Length: 253
Image (cartoon, rainbow, N blue to C red; front, side):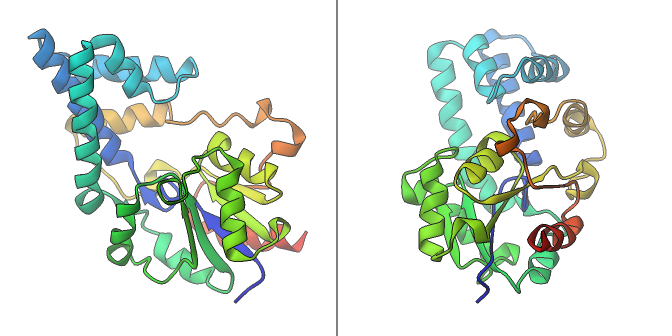
């Protein structure tokens, strides 16, 4: 087993969550329509999404729901979202097309997971081609530590018996992946996968409108200009196919 460890986030790093988020927004549109008795245009909902994200809000679907639904309606919608997420883990979530191949190319290193995900998601690893790939899996749902808590990263390092200096975190968010990894002493690669390579290509309708909204305003605003030198990512990729080369270059420095 290699002394070098590569740790991965799951959502939008190895697995495409865009279709699931589309379904969450559709469920919100339905909840608002049912409660008000008037059809709430999906394009208007997407406009709210984009505006709030540009204002720096996270979890915008929850913020919109709190504003437009009654407390009882909000609670019912949140419960429905939890069910939707659990069901989607079995049918709607799929690896980014290059993921399995790239993990194979990186198998000379020790591989692990550091992610905020429900434990039942692990049951899908075999279906996704991930079974036996990761020697250490650190989930918030298993450890009790949620990103960006550095204790989740330290838990993974301890379980791997790995020095932080020999570890690299690969994830799609500065706040939840890069910054806590760097503050734990690890190296970090920011992974902002281009939509065209993520494997979801809706032909039209509201799905396409949602994808177009994503292209205008991504879910996460990763502004490295706002970071201190110590929190900056050590590498950056927009396609998973770039990862082996970036890792090799980073470890050679």
